[in-house]
Image 1: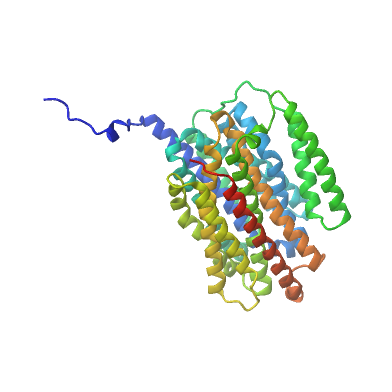
Image 2: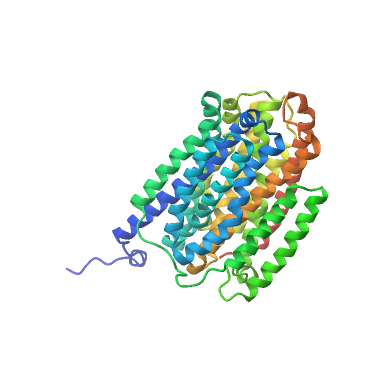
Length: 473
């Protein structure tokens, strides 16, 4: 008898070899665990900052550097490590990043002064840059376009699970074991990730092997970011303006060098010729600028202005990342079928509304209202992040994935730096060098409203940037 005929749909779906499936699952496991760890560290640390400030005698402005030192260092090194990963192998950079991240988590746990804490966070940021530069690139390397939105959605879900568990566990650890225990837990999780990477992840990915690394370009790039971010954080003082001017001058030198370099660290044609990549990256920068410092500000608000315990504050803050984790897989799957710019712009709009509503907080605002506003913010974040990442990585060829992933990570980190810079600037204007405590509640509440007004305005600008990318498909 003749073989049973197969439909065209069946004929178009060849069976995937088992070794390919095993490789994809191993890469997904390692990258998802790394995404969880990075976000868990950031979210759990926020709940320990007030206690750290009292223990190490740090003002509100100084505490912002505990977060900003990591973010600025990671921003400086993410694109260079993305390029190094393209040339020498992404698995190698990922493994080294996990080791560095874990080791300097332990140093942060034993920090005995503000200076030691800031230095350890700077060094931890180097490890973070290695992770940020390789994760999304590895996922994009091993998963085909038709599955990319789904796996990137799961990766975003891992990020948000870390953000969801971070406030609760960070508050619990701080309240019962002290803020240092937060870093100890991150060290232990980091070592687990090192072991899993060595055990499960085989092979190497280096599509740009044999090309040279642009050291001069990397130096100019890093100097530009440091000057611009330090200058921005010191506005409106004269020193801030001077640093910004110097940063812009070095930026011009960097652009001229990269346009002439034979093997540039950052291929500027990605922005000039690829409209989808350029505006998707800009949208990511704006979105993180408008959202990252929300948890930091609310942690201070809940514990200082409302007098809640670290654990109680964490239970409230979990509303946003829980909503993110719940809806990110759906947003990722939809972005494989629906135009990403529509989904991402919808998410950005909800983010702008959610941040604006937070500006109406008062010391007597109840928990249900705060949780509802955070849930709205989380819903908007979920529908922006996965579709936007899918649009960015889908616009690149394989030899550019490391740099593309690095640029996307840098946009996130620059946005986070700008978000913290806005908070630094506003807190300095209203509080000076004072700590956030019951005696300064009135000034802090004024600063809170101004911060969230600025964030909501950024969100509105981000909607237009998201729409301007045009059609992806």
